[in-house]
Length: 286
Image 1 (cartoon, rainbow, N blue to C red):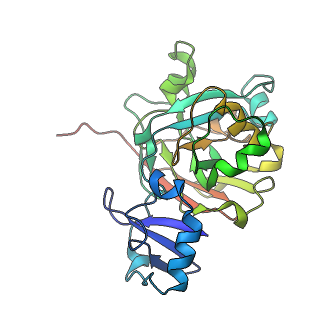
Image 2: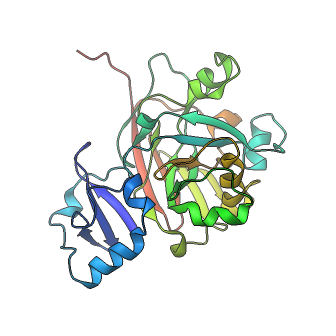
C-alpha cells in the first residue's frame, strides 16, 4: 500500500494511492499519524476498500503533496552509513551507527521550497531512505524483531548546513540539520511488502545534473540493524521517522558546489517516489 497526505500545510487529507487514483481515507482515520500506524492499519484500510468506503478524492492531482506522515514525535538520523560517503567526508566507515537528531518541524512536503538559512554558505543535499515506525520499539532483542515495528518507508532529503554541522557544532552534528524545512519527506509512505528495502536505487540531481547514484545494498548498517540498535537507547514511537544515511556525491565531498538560491534539487528512490525542491534565500519576516 501507498499512503499520502494532500492539501495545504496543517489541513492535509490522508489518501490511499492506487496508480493515478487517490482514495480519501477520512472514513478510516483523520491523518496518517502514530495512532493510525500503531493499529492494524493495513487491514483496516483493506476492509474499507472492499466495502467501497473510500471515495475518490476529487481534484487530488492539483493539490499540494504534504509529507506522507503527520509531524513525528522524533526524527532520528544515522550518519556515514555508506562507506564511500564516509570516505568522501574524510572519515573511516563507522563500526557502530552514528546517531544525531533533527527536529519535527524539519519534516515538510516533498516538493515544498527549502529556505537556505541566514548566513549559510554550505547548504547541502542528501538523498536518504526513511523508516517510519509502526509499533513502539524499546530494547528489541535482535534485528529480526525490527520488522514487526516498521510501518513503511519514505524518500527523504536530509538537508544539511555543513559549516553549522562541522565548524560551529561544538561536537554535535544537529546544529547543521535542524533548520525549519530541512527534511522534505515523501511523496508516499510505502508499506514493507511493496519494496525490497535492501536493494533500492537512490539518486539525486542538482539543476538536472546527476549527483548521487547508489543502492541501499551498500549501507553499512541495514534497516533492521538500525532499528534494533536505536531501540537500546531510545523508545521509538509509532509515527517516528528514522533517516538511514546518504551515499557519496554530496557537496561536502568537494566535487560539487554547495546550494544557492534558485537551485533545484531532485531526489528519488526506486519504488518510493520522486521529490523536487527549489532552494530559496532567507528573508526576514515582517
